[in-house]
Image: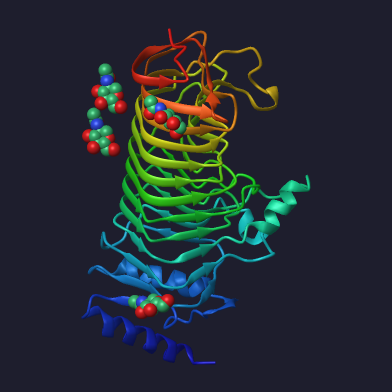
Length: 391
Ligand SMILES: *[C@@H]1O[C@H](CO)[C@@H](O)[C@H](O)[C@H]1NC(C)=O
Ligand SMILES: *[C@@H]1O[C@H](CO)[C@@H](O)[C@H](O)[C@H]1NC(C)=O
Ligand SMILES: *[C@@H]1O[C@H](CO)[C@@H](O)[C@H](O)[C@H]1NC(C)=O
Ligand SMILES: *[C@@H]1O[C@H](CO)[C@@H](O)[C@H](O)[C@H]1NC(C)=O
């Protein structure tokens, strides 16, 4: 074993050597082991501590190899607003010992990490053992989100792959200006609660050119999301792109100005969905545009469901207080896996209004599909098939 003074010297040397060429911290130089079996958590944390302390824009470099990591908290603010993670290898969560991170809310959490950018890399959450526990009906931890980004501004994630998270893959919470692009997310169709990307209480999030196949929502959009842009995404398998669940709480922030554009849904449970609990709430969803969607064998291509009340607990016979208005569906085509391709089940006490359907062409097994509506008002333009039931 090296003497502490030697390690200190090596570290100082690395820092000194790289500072002049815009500090790069290679986690292997800091003691990380690329064999996937010996834990590298401390080396990664050391890299973050050094990078975060740097006053010039630093890079944390993860070379090829597999790096076993327990849960990590990358906490800012830092002395710079531009830490870059360049990941060429795979970050691996503990394989069978899911409890060692399953009790943490997040496996990799960035908090107050303004200006962080993550480039490339594979995050392997090894969720299978936890899913098996959940599916067996035993008592299990909830599981960890693979990548949490919270209370951070100006974050960019590109070329990242997330595999088999225990719970959600990526959660953006309380953030401003986040760009995710070229992200790949994969988990099996039957893996529980493995939502692809969840956004909440955040403004200015953009999700581009990404491919998501998972066991729950490809993208879920929670309360307090504004100015969200989603474009060129492939979704499936999974539960589609969902605004909601909204209205779980009475005091709740609304969702406003969301664009979902050029998304291809393949064999998903839903296409574009807005979902709200059937209970009182001040929540709302306004100014939503679903544009250029292709549905391929989707069970509910277009759906608003304001009667969400799982297991009939805490909401039976109540109506949703969530106000849904100005929702446009433009240029949506393809096939429904069920007869009802368009379903608007809105609240009795606050009906959906200003729903717009424009150029919709959805069929069911080469026949006409159907639309069903309750408490939904709006207008139609162009060809709309199945024909509209809005009042
Ligand atoms: C990353 O790994 C690839 C091989 O997978 C290699 O070709 C490339 O040079 C590496 N990039 C860097 C910056 O080390
Ligand atoms: C809506 O959000 C987009 C970004 O997604 C933004 O460019 C646009 O200015 C926002 N519109 C309004 C009216 O705030
Ligand atoms: C409806 O929402 C769209 C965005 O989808 C926005 O551009 C438009 O201004 C909104 N219309 C009204 C009347 O608020
Ligand atoms: C609707 O889609 C069907 C099947 O893809 C196609 O044959 C038909 O021409 C389309 N109708 C319109 C009006 O585009």
